[in-house]
Length: 68
Length: 337
Image (tube, rainbow over the protein chains, first blue to last red):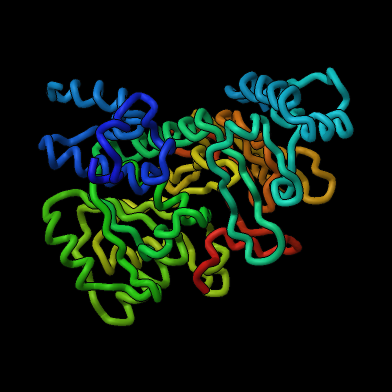
């Protein structure tokens, strides 16, 4: 998680939009861009809006065929 | 005037009466308890100024996760308390209204503003909120203006080159699009290839009043300089972020499925019929964390029935004529003069 400069240990369901300073609307855009280029996908508008936590994010990415 | 959102608004009035002591006190003082609420006009309303003078919040302090502010140049600023639920409703509603107008594909976004406007994350102004709110609908972002608000044509050209062939989403405040974008292109006698783009602009025309710019003239200059012909204005305010009134292809500003409007007499505050000029009152169903669901604005204008517009959108039409002259110059986007 180089976008937010956090440790892997912080990747829990407690990690939510606005729960840390770096994940604000600007950070959200950067995160979306990073995921899109990393996994070579194009997220739909509704998925970007609903990407509200680490766990919902995993579910969203699974929808795009990414396996964890 | 029956409204499809009346029942939601009655429920919200009850919710805020129970959750916000100041609001309950206000309602109890000005409105009879159990008086019939048969139409929008019967609902208790707050003047937008109330958010400058009072802290009005319907959630516990620890549930407030951001405070939105209008960037009033003089006097106090509105303070709008947002919890997680309301924030999510704002974004979802905005996305739905945007998607209805432009489709749900995320486009590269050309922001007619400078990066410094959004860089200071702690100074949460209306302009920052708008730019960042609409960024959710974008896939990439380029700021067209430098910090001194001058147009950086090479940067814009490079961005357009990079996204060659894609539909571009242009966003900006009305006065900036007119002065810093169209104006700069005219002054430099330059044109941009934005035929395959759409422009969304808002924030009001009040800063352009002295120039007497009409909406058709705005569109004509935009088309001439950039080739962009899908140009939409929106009417909205930080006190009701999310539920914007979007201009349709016929040029009317329609309420969304989550909002409505009526007009009141400037002096008596009595509700006026369609077509009569007065103060615009706006209604929105997504305000859970603060009592901002029925607000009397300081904007003068009128409303029309939805079917007066041939576009087929079912939302009430508002026509905004200007700001109440006695009102403080609020300048929701006044960071640049």
